[in-house]
Image (tube, rainbow, N blue to C red; front, top):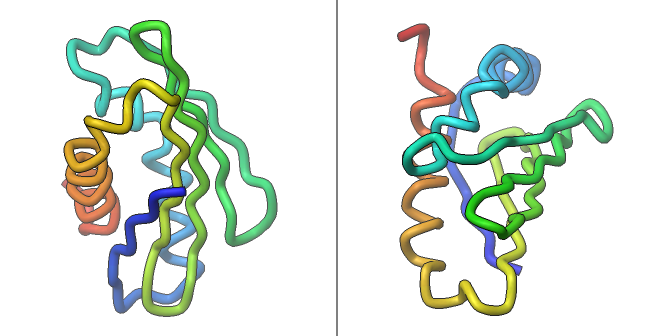
Length: 102
């Protein structure tokens, strides 16, 4: 399963707060806005989410660690070729998520 680590120097509680406040913005990751995102907190430091777009679903997990936000995702069989692009989008979105208010 591909994984992206995004380093941070924030307390875990602050990372969780920012994730919760901006979780609905995940839909903006989908090109053209044609899709939807479902998310839920599995436990205090783990958010599970699924991105649905163009007939595909990408199951993902975000784990809050002391010095990093770790995002694992599972690509459907036919989408392995877009893995580098998806990793870049996740890294960019994660960096933006952890920034102070926009």
